[in-house]
Length: 188
Length: 106
Image (cartoon, rainbow over all chains, first blue to last red; front, side, top):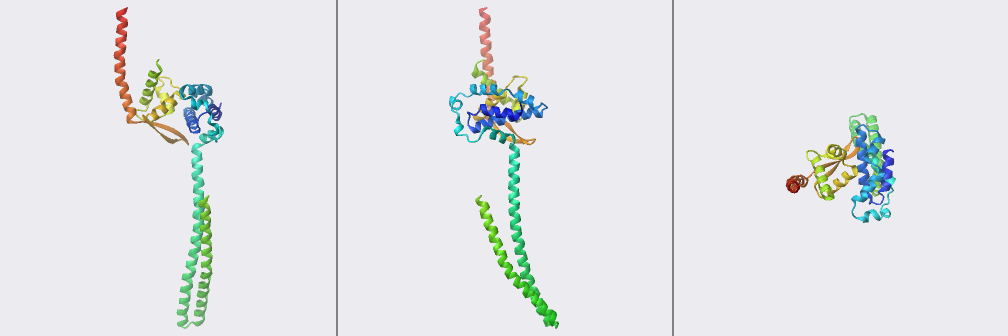
């Protein structure tokens, strides 16, 4: 009998117990089997050493003095099927790391989104600064007597400044979009 | 053996197994092996009883990619062991008295 088979059978045998208690007991036996396997026993041997499902069930009956828990099957209260509980126990440390990984991925996607927004605003900033400085530089060059080069620079500077105005609206729209996405994610 | 007496003895044995350092289920069973053979189910019941009586606390530790529960004795658990030692002296006195009565009748 494998560990999963054993836990499934034991879970069925303990199905009269509340979910938390059943889960705790299954975890306990799961740990016992794994500790024996770690010591060098095969899975079969480790399961056999823990005792049979019938023995454990019989002992449970003797240990619980309140007949309430044993007689009333609280299956209506326990929505999770036995196999799901067993799977949860067998893979328990794995679930946690998967959950952390999923969270990290979501976080990095979120960070990536906002870094794109940040980059857009940086481009906007660069356009404003370069627009101003190229225009001012062009005026300087113009005054120094190089009229054609000066005019070209002033023209280029004004084009950059004009682009920055367009870019401003683009950045604003992108930021709004990102904020909207954040809202949706937060709601989920 | 009287079930109440046996229960008390088992409790003290498990407490003694975690007295010097925190231990986990399988190690407790192995450590107690020379003195008594404890089944998993019995150990589970004892541990639950001791936890409910605040004689030990439980913490879960990740071990080799899985979870393992470690049991730690509390002050109440330690004083239970001391209590047991005192009780045992009384028990020995009673035993001596009982066996002496036997001897005088023979």
